[in-house]
Length: 210
Image (cartoon, rainbow, N blue to C red; front, side, top):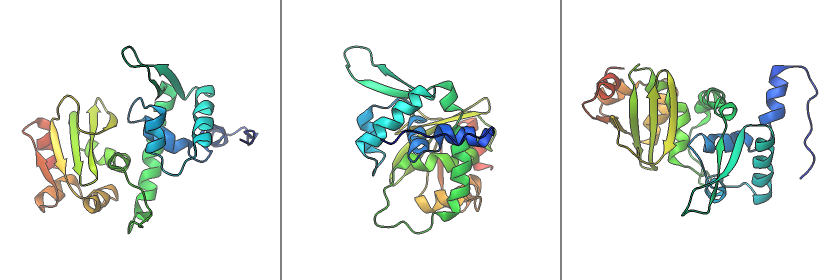
């Protein structure tokens, strides 16, 4: 891999791009925001990245204090990568990029890869507008993911909520994008029959009222 270069500018934006401006780095952050991931899992959910580039980016992220690598306890012998606190602080950055890019998601090209949890980033802030706390399981045709809302913080994970959900939201990708673009609230989608919200929790009721 070619040596890394700095912009050599005393500017916060330039320093940020020094750390995460390389191709693939922010998408690796997106995957690690889900939680600890094995190298093989990262490679599978980053279609198009070469093994050399992925290994190089992960090494850079470790050196910059954005990610760490650790061995899982027995009986597993696998290693996983996970974000540090500094790395997790990039969530609002990814959310802002997703919000800015949502209007560019028109027709899906036949060559476009897709993973259900990729829809989490543009959807997070819209789920949080209810002000209620708890776990939301989102179900798309592409698969499920879950979102945790607590104390103003929000995180997401791939797959069903491991400890159960306070609310379940079922919708299609097109409706999810409409919510992400601000064209529709979750509550409006439910009232129009485009979104199904199940659960009797405070969170489920708050989502219906958004």
